[in-house]
Length: 94
View 1 (cartoon, rainbow, N blue to C red):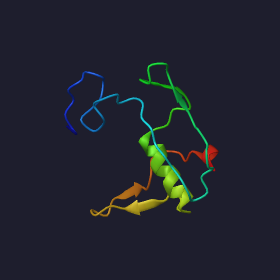
View 2 (cartoon, rainbow, N blue to C red):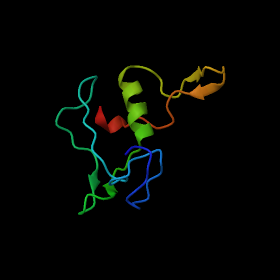
View 3 (cartoon, rainbow, N blue to C red):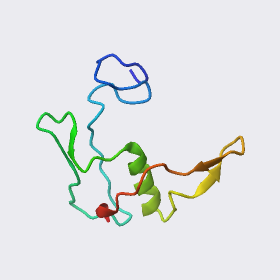
């Protein structure tokens, strides 16, 4: 169930409950190198072992691939300034 922590794995209501610290993302196109493997998990696939990234980094990478500056400021519906993406693009993917 999204938004309900039940496993005691350390997830918050905003994240994954089952194995919340390590997950897989597949990217293709927009200049991403084909066949590239970036990062690794520990031997239990429970925690990142090398090159950990955040969902915010994934979002920033997508904006970067689309030619949109992830650090640009936008206005939310209440006219407050916000940064488009809080993460850093994973430039090694290009």
